[in-house]
Image 1 (cartoon, helix red, strand yellow):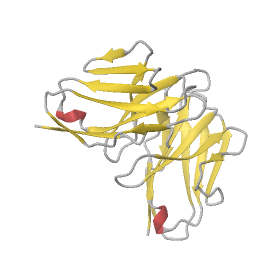
Image 2 (cartoon, each protein chain N blue to C red):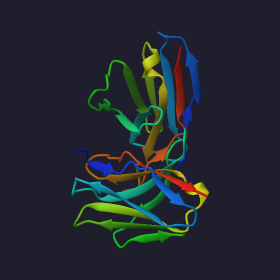
Image 3 (spheres, each protein chain N blue to C red):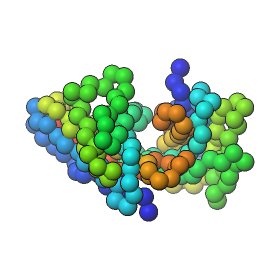
Length: 107
Length: 117
């Protein structure tokens, strides 16, 4: 079993809709969590950190569930430009990345 | 802040050539840098963790003699693909974490597209 797992998708999302997806991690010692966005043929870029109490950045909301060991990302009012692969990181004892969730926002 | 520069962006060379890729943290010190490889339509795969002043830690299945990593300073790590062959053609990406800040994200270089003919 991988240390960090994500549904690869793709999630096909109508423009303006809400989409949410999770990332599960197996290492309970993981201390910090992040969501990155990777566009096709580009490097990943930090989207947002994930804080214990949950946090929001515009249309994006990230949450952490330590008991069930997963983090989530919710995108509201999806834009065409949100189409990308979203990677989660559960850092701690070992650097661990999920394989990414592909999101396709369509008109 | 937290800029990572990767060079070169593109490399096209003949089979058997060795290729060196540089990864520099421009405005912070990085005790640890990471090297990834990504094939088309596949996920990012960690190849190795580069530690300043010590040997790199390679992931399972990654040949250390094939992919030579040197992390000679707190701002520079290099990856050398030795005797590259067409199957080594891929997108190579480095990242770094700021030595002085805990619980912080990775900062990625722009990546290097390697094409071996």
